[in-house]
Length: 551
Image (cartoon, rainbow, N blue to C red; front, side):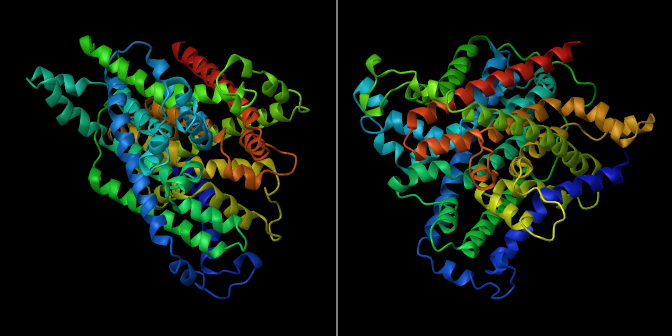
């Protein structure tokens, strides 16, 4: 397979996954009657939207929340990622697994879990006699809850970058008289800048397109975001498709602006930290600093994982919420009901895990090739490929779902994935493609430009150099991204609600239906079962991969 054919195949996949749905979104935003097959009244939907009194508040709320989440994610993820990547800490894989758990937890479940803990008469008040209701239902509370769900993107970006590059250059600086702090500031931190900027960009864009947390907490705190405005225009009568899609284009503009700013801050410069065969990074001995590092990791893990996880698990075994925390209120009826619903719950679990695994494999492969073509091969049109790979991060799931419906629910297609499980796979891959692209791109920028040309000089084709030279070096970053894709896809809600064909139900849809019916305990029981199943599957995959690398 030559480079031109690989480039054409990658561009075709990106066009199908991203460009065509985005084109139909743009057409619907411009032509209000486009869904009915008419191209009349161009731009007539923009005027009413500009007159919307909450428009400025939606833009301000989105930018403030997303910026706060990105900055707070960096404040948490950078030091924890440095501790994990540079130092030899106890149980290193345990921390990685711990910080993957937030991705297995749907954001709306995390928000509800925190509400049950912190609100008036919540679990915290029952145990300690006070609540944090005012903090939870505020702009700061929304930022904090979203950050505890999103900060791992920065943690994994930083730690994987350091695990790939090691500390060789910092050690050289130490030999030449630099203090540890000076070596970190002048050597390690610049090497981390692409990964840190990429992680913060993902955190920012994830926050801009999040719907569950602002929908759950925003109404009582007076915070409105663009995603909530889009959902209202699509859900409330009369349906305002043009207004919804104009707001969606605004989200794309915000994400592209963040992408441009990232390029300006990093200066468009690459840093090289891997110059040959990869070696095992054993990590430095932290000495007495091991204790505060481990305590910091444990404290963040307690807040991000243990507290909402316990809230979810406890709610799943409570007979009634009003009964409070007592043994007399404990029951196993919610779990028994899951296995007694004619297999619906277990079928939904199998469907979600299968789709998540397929999404991780597809986005991992496409992301690797796309990043390689842009960063290493630097082909013509690489900016188009890079932009197409970024845009889905700015698209809310509900907009991607409607865009796929507009695209594929057409009579002129001889074959269409609409009304089949394959359209769910398309939606997941579209939404999550930026993860492996950004992580692999950051890793590739540290490889330098001499490894692949050396392989080519010795007779290797471009594809062989990719397979035998590039892939082993960037595999840690690619694996981390694929695991997060698996985690997010296994609990994706909005596009599943829109696109799931009759008779097909995912875990997120099943849980959402339980909440709609008032069965909070059964919904939390299903969320707990899904979390445990996803962790077991991840651990199994990691064990198999680790065994394969040891042979």
